[in-house]
Image 1: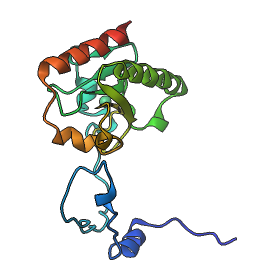
Image 2 (image 1 turned 180 degrees about the vertical axis):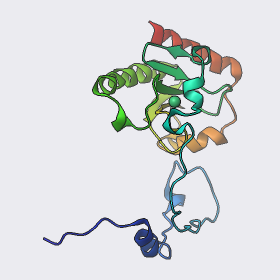
Image 3 (image 1 turned 90 degrees about the vertical axis):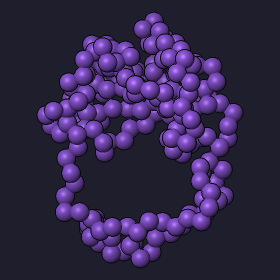
Image 4 (image 1 turned 135 degrees about the horizontal axis):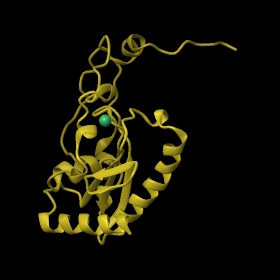
Length: 193
Ligand SMILES: [Zn+2]
């Protein structure tokens, strides 16, 4: 058996930089943009990654936020949203109260509870009228304080399905404030119940 070493970022860059592909986005119903497009030039790898906001729990905005800034809080978990509505009906973010950087850092007890929390929040957000699906996502490259996204997308728009929903969120004009507040209230009540 031939054993290969993992590819370094420099090796990856040398292999791909001149060979980028353009996927057939014009055939993708959910792709939000029209017009001639080409991939951006891939820049070479940096020497090291920048630390994330709140690195090591130092000056972490999520650790410093008071419970009053959250939609819902429990002993070990908190749920928040943005101060203003966005294009999609509702976006919620779930965090452990304590500062952990990545899912694999969670102690087993919290990791187990996380499964219950995900099901509970997804169920609450999906109960909203007009919501077709709730995407549950974790991206870890912004703030270090571990957080999961709950992204509710409207029902019955085939173009708004899938991962581009996060882009459509910036394309659709914001949900009217009164509707958004009502959505939040319904979901918060469901979480509290
Ligand atoms: Zn934190």
